[in-house]
Length: 169
Image (tube, rainbow, N blue to C red; front, side):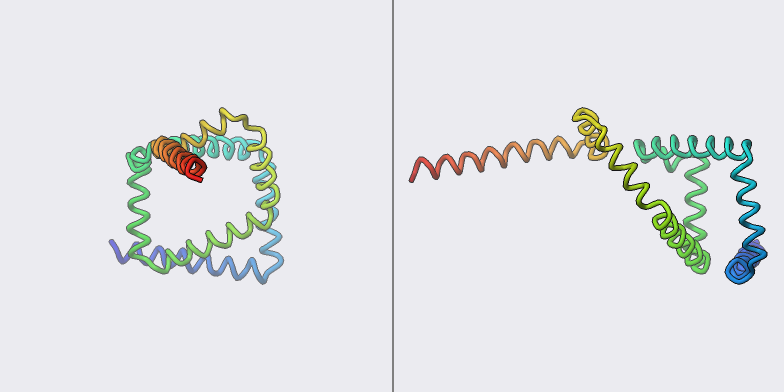
C-alpha cells in the first residue's frame, strides 16, 4: 500500500515538474493555460463557487483562530494530521510544497503588495477606539489584563520615584 502511494506521489511530482518546464519554455502551453484560466475566471458559476469557498474558508479560519481546539477536531483536523505525517515521511514533497508556497507568496506580494498595504491601512484608519480595543483584546486575550495591571503598577512606581526625588531635592 505504501509503495503504491509513493509511486503515485512520484508520478504526480514528475507530471508537475514536466508542466513547470513546459510553462517556462513553451509559449503554446503558457497560452493554453492562460486561456483556460481566463475562461474559468470569466465563468459566473466558477466565480460564485470560488466566492462561496472563500467565505466558508474564511469563516472556518476565524472560528479556528478563536477556538484552537476546534481547528484540530473532526475531519479537517484529521486531514491536517495526515498531511503533517505525510510531509514528515516525504521530504521531497515537503520541499516541493515549500518551494511552491514561497513562489506563490512572492508572486502575490509582487502583484498585490501595494494593494494589500493600502487595504489594511485604510481598514485600520477607519477603526474607532472601541474597535481597536476589541481587536486587541481578541488577539492578545487574557494577557491584556496582565499588561494593563503591570503598566499601572510600573507607571505608579515611576511616578512615586519621581515624586520622592522632587521631595528629597
